[in-house]
Image (cartoon, rainbow, N blue to C red):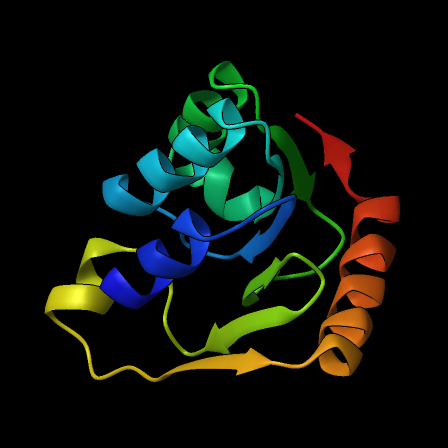
Length: 134
């Protein structure tokens, strides 16, 4: 979580997030803080999982000015991705949750590559096209 918070804190213009599970209060707070700094922040959440959790994360982020989208087109929108400033990709098995940080065996990759970030960003935009705005 600390590594993710550091990357969000260093964002200069854009943070795009794709998340299956997203219950981490520190990561939510970092995204809201980035938005308040004027950073463009968008999140695509798994629509089915959000429904199960009564849209808590979607409501919190939306109330803080984050554009939130729900992907209901897949059985699971099982992504765990952040694209920051079109140059950094965060991915791996790490859901943005307390359990990922404190209970599970997880992996997290932070890759600095404009070329790779462009591919991930293209995929993000493709997913957003069929997602519904929250």
